[in-house]
Image (cartoon, rainbow, N blue to C red):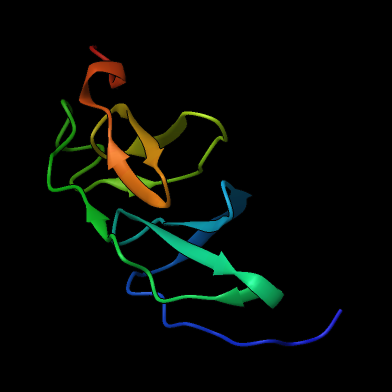
Length: 109
């Protein structure tokens, strides 16, 4: 393994990294955002083109006041968020990560 390059992650407390659809997918717990970094030939990591930050709140504000992204899952992309009690859905439109609101799951108390 050899170092190729690096990119800045515009988020706080990186908690999950995965690879899908020629992109490195990053979830940031504290800032509640998800970031796809496309990879081109020779393994070069490109600049993130989408910074999806959720502003919603939990149904229980005393327990969770902010969204906390946890992880990506391949194919359709599902991100579990503490703090907003939901699983957000995304898909790749070629190399761009796009929200899929029709597949979101909201957890009710």
